[in-house]
Image (cartoon, rainbow, N blue to C red; front, side):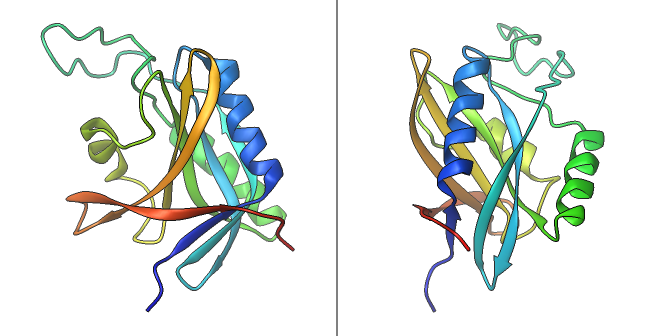
Length: 161
């Protein structure tokens, strides 16, 4: 069985990068609208939403709970708006994305914990690295082993019909 892939249209990849650069040094967040083809995902549109993190949880004694530099909050109402937009276009939500300002495009433990409440086993968790305000690598991850860990999936940027 071939491993699953995420294909981003060039416009989607560009929109994710632009969103990440625009919100730097804070994290951005958004959803991916597209189609499932078996375990593969085709992301045709980025649906940017506001990072609504406002210090809901302090994670450590030296933690700034209001910092959006290393965390985001995806409001369920924004998810619903994206779902309605996808349905109106004959698409579905195939994943979400967020940025890692001045950090690698690998999931953190905070990302793993936050991912527990969203998506399913084929849901793409895309991370856009941003270094000194410029978009860098983009990666995609699947939450596996009942949410115990992330596994990388191949990202392809190509024209999609």
